[in-house]
Length: 127
Image (cartoon, rainbow, N blue to C red; front, side, top):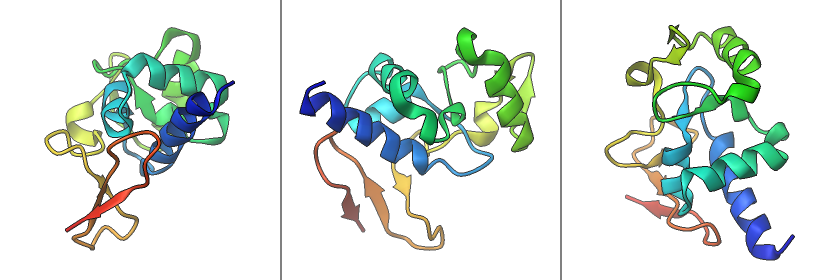
């Protein structure tokens, strides 16, 4: 594997680790934060995302990928994520904010936000 591949994978893992318990993101939202497409995010998670909360990432329509569907929905339910007819209610639990694509810092009360512009760059504090 080349360094660029590992850099993208690490950037994906870094963002996925920030998804709070009980919240869910999409492959596309993670991709926008990292600067790659949703399929690249899925590839990173399927090839080495076992150490991060991979199950908090779903398709844009709120469904889970078929190979991990049952386990993913079980894990999400254990965190209280609302699921109706096999779909996560993204309107209720989507992360990050869909309008701004910003990643809140751990201290939610802070007005400082972090925006990841690319896979190889460092997080940039804004505000």
